[in-house]
Image (tube, rainbow, N blue to C red; front, side, top):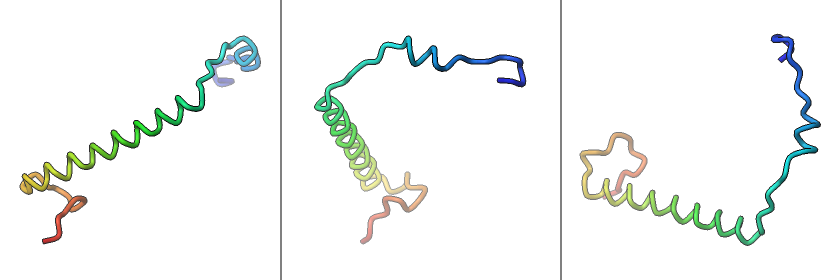
Amino acid sequence: MSDFNLSLDLGYLTKNRTYTFFKPEWIIFAVYLSEKIGYWRYIKVFRHLENHPEHEYYPLFRLKK
């Protein structure tokens, strides 16, 4: 920022900002849901490529037969 002759007072931001506290249970549940959804997406991709091998462009999900 000094290239533009500007300065920032970051101490002001940390003193005057209100923080949101999330219960640890909420964070754990959000991570759990994220993992479940991510895993579900891989299953959907695998099943799609299993039924339509012509769409495969990289052997990431290649079935061994």
